[in-house]
Structure formats: structure tokens, C-alpha cells
Image 1 (cartoon, rainbow, N blue to C red):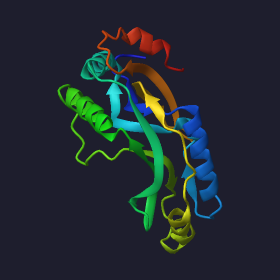
Image 2: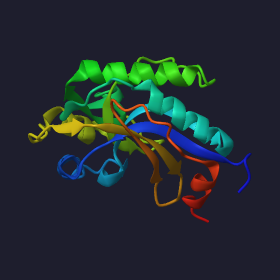
Image 3: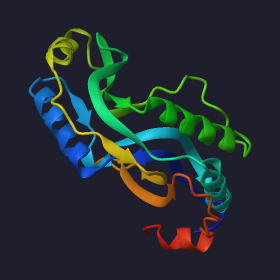
Image 4: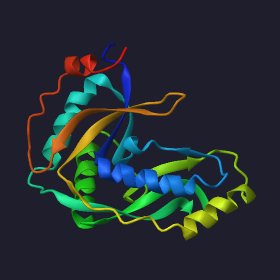
Length: 212
């Protein structure tokens, strides 16, 4: 690997095992329809704060330091999965997701800090407003509108079971590798909230955690 090689990266919060089980339950209820959906593996679901795209490996150390310092003084907070939603709408679903509720203001503040810090490093700000959610599936391209009717009905009728909230104490820089069997995610570094560390992530360390 050379310094010009790129990795597909994003910044996100990981979800605990009990939330993954909750997601599997919701997906199981929706799978009963015949609509072709590519379901996200529950243990791969993240709450994305910022998608970065292809980043040259030599920039990752700089990126890690910026993310660590962006959240100095922040405290942890609690979130909880909420109701079902879809982009662009429940009546024309392309992306299926679970909303989150709880301490939304600290979450929004964290995302703004991440956005501001990365903008200073040349990563353009997102044009769309941040809408916190957990993506659980994507309708396959080319699905006709009339084929979506069973899924639309299920989305409207499905009431996700109650799920306990979880403590958010960190977020992560994650690498995404697109494969025929689905995306593979690797956490490169976690950033504890409220701690401004030097983040001694070196290019050589990143090389070692990159699979051949």
C-alpha cells in the first residue's frame, strides 16, 4: 500500500448488541413482504455522523487528530431506537430506517462539531440537514411502484417493539469495503467523548490493520 491509496471512510456511532437484536426483530417483521430489499446486517448498523468517501491514507492521521480534538469537553448521552421511517417517504420507500430519540441536542451538537472540524481540513459540509437514523435496509433499484405496496402497508402498520436506551460514550472512524456479499466495516479508531487525546494513529498502524 502506498500513501496515495484511498480508503472509503465515514464517522459514526456504533450501536450495542441489544440494539442489534432489536433491529433484527424489526427486519424480521418486514421480511414477510415479497418486496426485494437488501437488508443491512444488524451488527453492521451505525448511526452515521459524516460520510467522507475515499480518503488518501496519508490524511487519516490528520483526520483522526481533528476528530479527537473536536469533542473536547463533551459528555456522554443516551439514545434509543424509535419508529420506522423511509427516504424519500414512507409512501415511496428507497431507504428504510429506524429513528432515534433521547438526548438529541447533544447528538446534534456532536455532529456539528465533527462537521466543523472536518470542514477546516477540506471536507465539504453536507448540503442536506443532518437527520439522525439507523439504516436497516435498501429497496433494490428498479422495483416498480406497485411492487412496493406490501412494504408500504407493513411500514405503516408495524410498531417496533420497545428497546432500552443505550449510553453513547464514544464515536468511531470506520472503513467501509464494498463487496458482492455486502459491505464490510472495520473500526479504525474510537474517540471517547470529553477526551482530547493526541490520537497516536500512524500511517503504519493503519497499514497493519488493512486486510490484503
